[in-house]
Image (cartoon, rainbow, N blue to C red; front, side, top):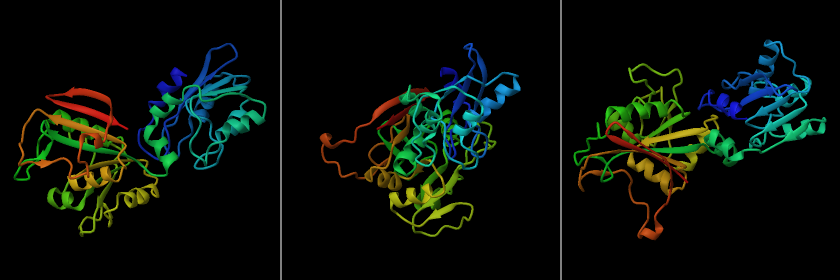
Length: 322
């Protein structure tokens, strides 16, 4: 299973499908084949592992399949993995997490009904951690939301004159672009768009574009002249997520500005915060990263859990979640 998870990590962190890895172990306990899901439209991990087993000249009869996610039981862009495992003569399946996708789940029950030994949910926490955004989207029906904040030590996103480039250093900006490459959509408000005209692209340290580019979304009712962006004419965060979910967006990155960020936080729709703190002070005249949240005492503070903290150049990156 450790190897299956290592394989799954090789899959794309963006897109409508989860990252999944599979290892086929023969009757002697030797790895006969392995595979992982490369993204929407490509063979699922189980099918890739079965193909690899055959390519190596090994048998799948009586073998055990270790999979990071319950084998699917539906036909979409590809056929059901449960049937592929059955046809291959697999005798036992061990999976880390039950599939939360109601359209795809049921593979374990099918295989059990057809005489196969099943061990399920052997490591659900690790399974969720591998596909946190996707699991959230499947269980709630809306995309996972990450809010990006870049601030001075005193919590300012811009100086008194409105200037904000650059509070953080170049290493932090490179890091943020690598995070962009892992999401399905980047969202800004019309105010930020009209003021800054951000490209909202994901670029490598040398300035070249990553192969995957997230959907670029502008939210708000003011008109924008930019057909290459998706313009959602609403101020309601829930409506934004509903429209993006209809486009199979699983992970949304909110990048600005404070008005949009505040709206999503107030609506209780932020699942993770990526905060870049610069060793700089801008004082009370600067623009705060967030507006009023209706909090009047420390007892009402919105509390988060720190998942990661690391130094990036002179800045500090902190990832927190609920």
